[in-house]
Amino acid sequence: MTDYPTWARGSMMVDWEHRIDMDRMRRERVEKTQAAMKEKGIDALILWKDENVRYLTSARVIMIQYRSSTTYGVLLRQEGNPTLLASSGEAHRIEECMPWIDDYVPIGILEEPGLVEHTVGTDIKERFDEWGVSNGTIGLDGHTFTQRAMIEKYFPEATFVDGEQFMYMSRVQKTPDEIACLHQACAIADAVTITALNHAEPGVREFDVAAEAMKTLFTHGGEFGHLASPFVASGEHMAPPTRFPTDKIIRNADIVFIDIGACWNGYFGDCGRAKVAGGPPHPMQKKVYTTVYKSLKAGIEKMRPGYTNDDSAAEFLEVARSAGLEDNFIKLFIGHGCGISPNEPPYVGEVMPGAESVEFVPGMTFAIEPLIFVPGIPGGAGVRIEDHILITEDEPVYMTRAPYCEELIIQD
Image (cartoon, rainbow, N blue to C red):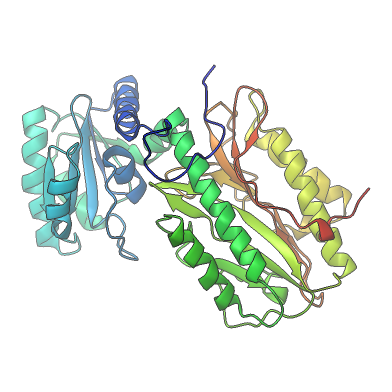
C-alpha cells in the first residue's frame, strides 16, 4: 500500500519539516518512463508537448501562446539522462540553474523549415546515431507537419509509435512526491477560488473578480491557472456557459461560477465553485445546484479500485435523471485526468464516441466537474462544481476543500 501525503505543507523550502524531495521526484519520473519504454519496446522518445518536457526535465520556461511543440522538446532513451531541447533564450538560465540537465541543445522556434531540419538532421540525428537507436522504435507526441517530415527524412529505417498515449499512461499513477505537489497546487487553487467567491458580489464585473483571483494565485507562488484565461461567468453567462471573463456586471441573484485552478511546480490543482450573488436565489437555481452537488458526491463515491470511469459516470447521470435534468448537462465530459497536464485521459463521462473504459487504480488523480444549466432563468441557472480527487486503495480523497454554497443546497 502506497503511503500518499494527505495535506499541503506549504510552498516554501524549510529546514524544520520534510516536504517534497524534488531530486527524487525528477529521478523517479524518468525511471518510471524508462521502465515503461523497456516494457513496450520503445527505444527512444522525441517529445514536444509542454507537459512531457516538464515531466522529464523539470524545465520551467517561458510559455508562448499557440507555440506548444515548436519551442521545447526532450529526447529520452532506455538508459541515461534526458536531453533537453529548448529555446536559445533559456540557455544561460538552464546552464546556471538546472544542474540535473547534462545535455542541453539550444534551438530556434521550430516554424521555419531550415530551423527544423538543423535540429532534427544534426542535433537529434547525431545523438540517436551515438545511442544506436536511429533504426529502432521511436515514440512521438504532438508535432508539426514539418517536424514529422524531417524526422521521417533523417530516420528512414525507424518504426514510429504513439508516444503521446504512452506518456499519458506512464504518468497516470503519481508518485508520493507528485501527490504532495498536487496537494499544494490544490491548496493554492482553493485560495484562488475563495478569493474570487469573496469578490463576486453585485455591482462587480467578471473581469474584476478574475483580477483579484489571479493576484492571489501569484501571491501564493502559482505559475498560472489551468486555463489560458480564467473562467469567471455570471448570471445568463452560465446558461449556456461563457468560459472566460467579460465586462458583464454581476447583478443581484446572479449565479457566479469560478474555475481558475492553479499550477505549482508544474502540477495543476483544479477547483470550481458556484454561488449566488446577493439573493434570494430562484427555485430553479437551487434545484440545479442541488442536483449538481448530489451527482458530484454520488459519482466520486464510485471512484475507487474495482470500478471504472463508466461506473462513476453512470452515477452522475442517474442523479440528474432522477431530478429531470439529465438532458441539461453540458455536452462535455464530466471529469478528466489532471496532474502535470491540466486536462488529459482518462475521461469520466465523455459524451463523444470512442472514449476508453478504464478501471480506477491508486495514484490516479482527476478533476471531476459536472455542469448542468437551464436557460431562461433570471440570474442564470447554470452550475458546475469541481473537485480534485485522488484514487487510493480505499476511499477517494478530496484534494480540494473550498466551501460549497450551502444557501443553494435543498435539504432533504
